[in-house]
Length: 274
Ligand code: GLN
Image: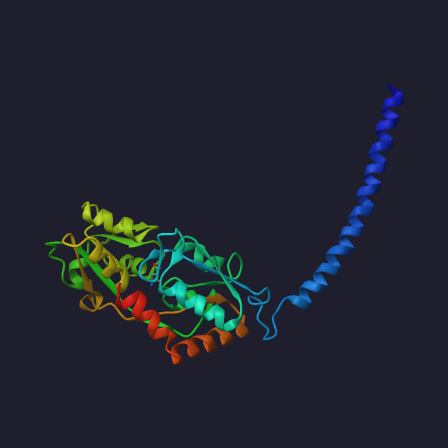
């Protein structure tokens, strides 16, 4: 028994010695790795996001025609084609990650490099991300069931309103006097609840509203938000705060894409033929 204890003790001591050595060794390795990482942390232009040659892009593929899941099960749409064209100009590989819209802002600069999701520029969002130049003007629309009598901003008071969680439609609805707001992760679920009579209207961006109007033809109508005094909104790409080199490069690529006709082609393919 005593012998066994001694052996055990010896083993434990050897192990801790080994750990100590290993510990200091790995500390050195980490330091060395850190130095290389600092040297590699930005690309030639000074952008951290572009340093590894891969632009990881977050989106929420529930927002046609800007982003949706195509027949091959992959994120597709105007925004996806646009960011791929930008990636090509910048010489980086674009990898798209589909996630909830409400997670995009906090993931930009950590889990993902940038977000493209028909995202409206707002002062509040500007506190956590930097935006590219705007690439599209939109406005919120009001989707109504056939035969609804809602027609003015006043009519929206005290109504049951469906929205997509964390969107500008959500912010507008939450400010309407007496409104009961139901927030959905997927816009189409809000539309389904409108058709089922669980909500009285849905507030969502213009182009998805028009896509849903066509998809559920005869059951719903999409009305221009200007009729409800909603302001125009600007879509832009969200980028990590402070990566000025990235913003500059993305804007330059966007300008080139607009100048060389690629942008108009994408509008025709994805938006005008929606
Ligand atoms: N434009 C809206 C916003 O930025 C909705 C975007 C979306 O649902 N993908 O909040």
